[in-house]
Image (cartoon, rainbow, N blue to C red; front, side, top):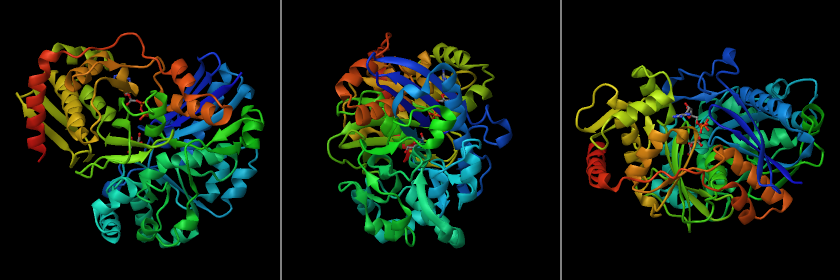
Amino acid sequence: MPRALGIDLSTQGVTALLVDTDRGALLARARAAFGPDFPSRGHPEGFLPGGASGEVHADPLLWLDGLQLALDRLAQSADLSQVAALAVSGQQHGSVYLADGFQLALADPDPSKSLAAQLAPFLSRPTSPIWMDSSTVEDCQAIAAALGGHQAACDLTGSAVTARFTGPQIRRFARLEPAAWSRTARVHLVSSFATSVLAGRDAPIDTGDGAGMNLMDLAAGAWSPAALAATAPDLARRLPPVVPGPTLVGPVSAYLVARHGFSPRCQVVVGTGDNPSSLVGMGASRPGQVVVSLGTSDTLFAAIDGARADPAGLGHAFGNPMGGTMSLVCVRNGSLARDAIRRELGLADWAAFAAAVDAAPPAQSAVLPLEHDEITPRRPAGRVAVGAPVSGPSLARAAVEGQALSLRLHSRWVGTPTTRLLLAGGASENPAIAQVFADVFGAPVLRLGVSDSAALGAALRAAHAACGSSLADLEAAFCQPAPGIVQPRSRLAPAYAALESALAAALR
Ligand code: ADP
Ligand code: XUL
C-alpha cells in the first residue's frame, strides 16, 4: 500500500502530509510553526525581524528543528515505517551556505542529537536570505549588465534579474563576505537543503526551484555558464546539479530510520519550490488552469506552453515539475498585510475580518496595503488608494479588493483565460476573501478538499516518481474540488474594470 509523505517547509512553518495513494486518502497531517512553537528563537513570523538595507534572513537551523518537530508530531498519529516515498516543497529563492565536511555530517549524523546541532558547525553563513530580501539592487544591476540587460536575462533564465532570486543573493554575499564565500563549498536552496538532510546525501535542485535563481538556462534545464560567471567566482563547483522534477535522490538517511522510524527502503524524490509543488497539488500541472495561492505571499500561477515572459519584467517562468513550464506572479504583501489591517481595525480573528469585508459595499474603492516594499508592482511600502475614500472597517474590503485587482492587473501577461480560479493557501478558507477573488476575476472560485496544496503536491510528486502512480490517478483521487463553488457576481464587472484602470494609472 503506497504511502507518500509531502513536507512543505514554507515561510512560517513546516507542514507534513501523509497520503495513501491506493485509497486516495489523507492519513495524517502535522505542523510545526517557527514563531509559536519556538518563541525564544526570534522568528515570530518565520524570519528575523529588523534586517538592515532590505535584508530578510532566517535561521536554517530553525528550519531543521521545525522539520524534526513536524516529523515527531506526525509520528504520534501515523506509522512512519510504512512511508514508501517522500518529497519536499520549500519556500523559493532562500539559500543555505555550507562549508566542506557537510557531506559527512549529512551522511552519518548521531541519532541521539538533533540535525541542527550536527549541521551547525558546517554553516559558512549563519543565516539564510529568504524570498522577502530586497538588499541586492546593486547586484541585480551588475548581473543584468553582464548578461546584456534584463530582457536578455529574462530570455535566458525566465525572469528579469530579481532582487529576491538566489543568484543576486549569492553575488552580494560573495562581494561583502569574500572570506566566508571562499569557505563555502555548497549553496543549497531551501528545498534541496531539506532534501539533502532527509536523504543523508547532497541532493540536486529541480528545474522548478532552479529557475528561481537567475542562474539556469530555462530552455536547456541546465546551469547557464554566462549567468554563473556574472554572479560569483567559482560558482559552478558550489552548486548541486540541476535535474528534472521526477528524479530519485535515494533512500532516506540512516538518521531518519533510527530517529524517526522510517523504513530504510523509503525513497526520497528531488524537492521543488512551494509554488511549483502547489501547481501539482492543485491538479493544475497541465495548461488550462489558473491557481491563486493566498499564503504569506500571494501568488498566481499556471502551467503554460513554452516560456512566455512578462514584458514588464515582474512575472516569471519556472520549470513545471511535471514537465514544461509554469508562469508565476508573486506579491509580497499577502497574508501578513491582511493580518496587519485586521489588527489595525481591532478585529479579533479572521471570522471578524470576513464579517467586515461582507458588511462593506463591493467595488467602491481599492487600497493596496503595502506594509513592506512590494515586488509586484515594484513599489516602496505605503498605501495606494483609488476610488471612493475609505474609512473604518470598510478598509478590510478595500484592501482585499486592492490585492485581488492588483494580482489580476499584473497577471494579464500570462494570457491563460481565467474560466475558473483554483484558490489555495491559508487565506483561501476565508469565505469573504474567496468571494472577492471570484468577483474581481469574474470567474467561479474552487477550493480543493485538501487545503495544504504545497505539501500535497510534494506527496503526489513522491508517489509519481518513486511508486509509479500515474498523475491522472493521483489527481482523480486527491485534487477534486470541495463542495461550495463560489460564483462571481457579474453585475460588478464594470465597476471592477474601472477600479483596475484607476489602480493601473495610480501605479504608473
Ligand atoms: P505559507 O505557506 O506561506 O506559510 P499558508 O498558505 O500556510 O502560508 O497561509 C498562512 C497564512 O494564512 C497566515 O499568515 C494566516 O494568518 C493566514 N490565514 C489563515 N487562515 C486564514 C483565514 N481564515 N483568513 C485569512 N487569512 C488566513
Ligand atoms: C515566489 C516567492 C514566494 C516564495 C514563498 O517567487 O518568492 O512565493 O516561494 O512562498
